[in-house]
Image 1 (cartoon, rainbow, N blue to C red):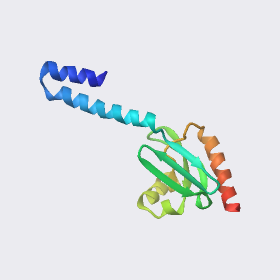
Image 2 (cartoon, rainbow, N blue to C red):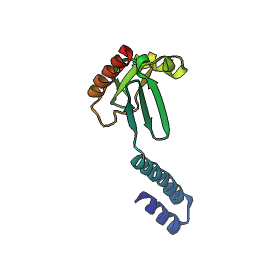
Image 3 (cartoon, rainbow, N blue to C red):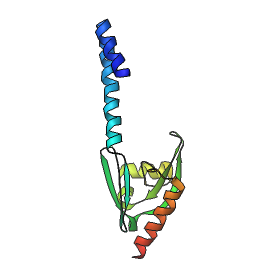
Image 4 (cartoon, rainbow, N blue to C red):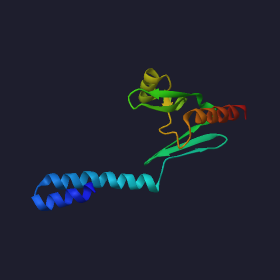
Length: 132
């Protein structure tokens, strides 16, 4: 509706504001369509976890992951699953994350699960990977 309104406003008023509105909301519409066609996912295998959201993909070996716990982001007001991994701990962002939230990494989403249940599942998978 905003895209159509921007196009109508741009044609009726012959100004750039309508085109900017149409372009901005058109870009948001494309991104939302991409989210619907390719939603984020988390795949847990006996040795690794692979997670993706939008165009970014990560993989971490579960045997090296430690300390899965809930972390409440005070700014976004959402709860994330935080963990430590040597690959994340060695990077600047991981060091900053450790200072801010206590862990070097976090999953970007809960992937349709309750975060507390996801923490329990990942801790169980990580312990099994270390035992193997």
